[in-house]
Amino acid sequence: MGQMVEVALEIDVALKEQAEKVFAENGLTLEQATILFFEETVRLGKLPFELDEDLKQYIAEQPDTPASDSAGSVRA
Image (tube, rainbow, N blue to C red; front, top):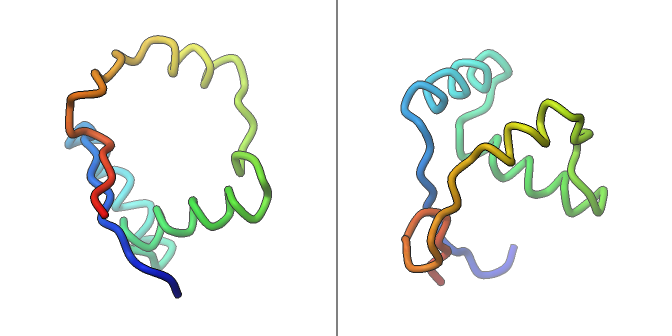
């Protein structure tokens, strides 16, 4: 495996806890599930799910994060 980077992001506490529960039920940690998502996205060359109208609406309603904010930043 190549050089590793740390990825930092901010998500709602309740969302994180709910996601961790689902991941744990499938034998995964939050970190493992996130890496799996990235790997599957790269393998498929697209998102591993369809962006239906509900998801598009959800994305449109999310506040934009300023570029100067550290949320979602990648540190090499």
